Image 1: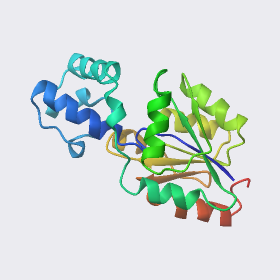
Image 2: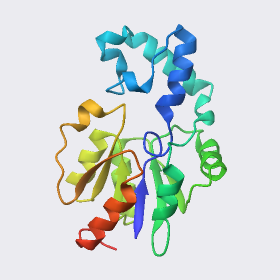
Image 3: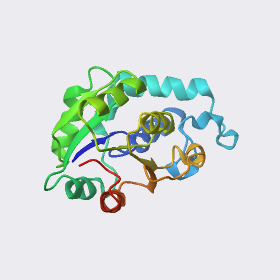
Image 4: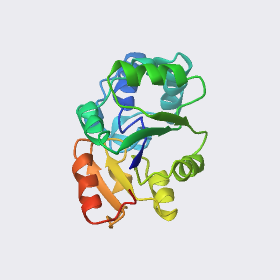
Amino acid sequence: MIIGCDIDGVVADYMGTFLKYFNIKYKRSITKENLNKWAFWEQEELYVTKDQFLSAMDDFNEYRMWQSIEPHECAREALCSLDSGMNCIFYITTRPLGSERATLKFILRNGLPIRGIYFCSEDNEKVSVAKQINASVVIDDKVSIINKYIESGIPCIAIENECNKEEIRDLKETETLRICYGIKGVPNIIAQMEERNILDV
């Protein structure tokens, strides 16, 4: 079975690393626990402007600070559990051009299983790649792309995290859409979906 897996927010703790830089730049002490959405400037209680967020994000990407991102807790254990027997993991990400080498180093340095990586320029391309590799199921945390996967008939596991807590409430679980907080529980969910013959394997 082929499993398509997003990287940032699912495997890699992008926001945790970004917040460390943001807090240094603006002398703040915001933690992931304070967030309920990616665009956290919209959270009035945090007193962050959109310009501050975008400026810090531009710096973060320009100076390739994402090279220091660490994986989420339990990511290696969960992915290694999935990448066994007849299963194989392909990463499908919208990381920017120029991040290919750093992304591969991240995967290898942290002992994550890999059969291939696809870098996409937009959400729709992720759906096309999933179809191209005949993914039986995909794992992602971005609600807009999760909806596109489901509309395209591709079973999906939506990863809930600090950055999508608000949006993900709008999703309703079905046989082909399951919601999981973090990646730790994904192997069990996929096993359940296999038992119910929901996945093409």
